[in-house]
Length: 239
Image (cartoon, rainbow, N blue to C red):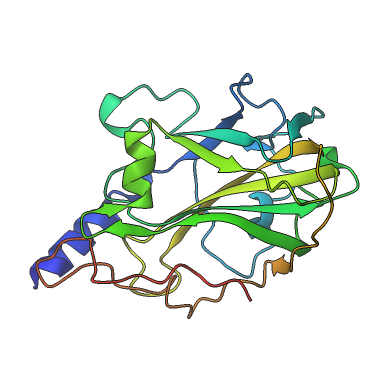
């Protein structure tokens, strides 16, 4: 067995113990203004409606009627945690083996408190993405070093109103076959103020924008030395 295959198998075995949850937005209390699951399981079917905001209302998910007011052009921060009560220093955010990109999308909606039912379908536009940063650092590595904090800037050119803000981490440690990539996402409920409304971004559908054959989703990230740092990586393209 090749060394890279050994690492791939080891990473796959760590799946159960190394998931993650977005649980706080803008330093609010846990679950305020965000639709939050009680467990840290990923989505793996890119055709599922759960790809939008991590599932329809089901037992174990905590909804919130609150919306978070944010100014256009300002920074919004989300906090990722392995579990809602986890305090293990070596695995507080997500396992370091779970390399991959970190992204963010927005969708204008009539009422953000209708999260997550307002999530599936067209209207999504990407506002941030980071993938393979260097030959020794992924966006997930950066997320871990930042203590699980993901910061995104709300575009100043969008219209005022309610939006879903979708934070996403894609773990690629077992993505050599589909389904294998793990998708972690949560949607915050925000109301944007102070936007100029001068631009209407092109939008895509979630589910629909990702494909199981996308080279950024079905991919072997291990190099010839068995390290999870390929020569290049293409972040999933929105289509």
